[in-house]
Image 1 (cartoon, rainbow, N blue to C red):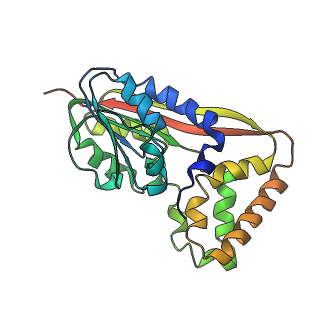
Image 2: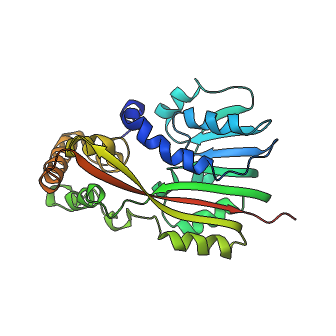
Length: 254
């Protein structure tokens, strides 16, 4: 299922807060070569670029729907291209990624590969959702295991690739990283009801489920998920505590 920028940005303010925390981890230096992996609509990439004077920034995203909006934020020194971050090419002084790397499996291999594209003295700065054990995520996995959906998700057990935060600290250390930051933070969101959580995850998590299903089963899956989430979280308003991992590490200069 294609990404829907309008659906994704329904909770724009809530999704921006982790970016602000991530941006605070960036070492600001002029004249950097920067890539933003999973740049989405490009608005936050523009904020990143504006913070780094004289730098050349490339936003990379696999979604043509998201990239169609990114051109509104392009300027000299800031461009956007379509591509898969798992196939990154080139060398960079800053590899930045806000809420994208969780879509890839095998993070030890992925992070080591990305680290290889970092110049000496460069920095890697990453934020990822780590809410896989929350009912909003757990119920999606459980619904996918029900008989009418199970055949479409043969690798269902692999859908939670984000590691414990301490594993990323060890990973960066093993790669030779310095100035390592590895933080797990809970972002508190108060939403009107469980249906609002459904709207939230329709813009992210559920794209991975609905996109696999034939059109005739997408609505069935969504309503089954909605019903079970409302049963589990009937309170109004509802507290949605969203965990995220914030990471930063620098490669030693030669």
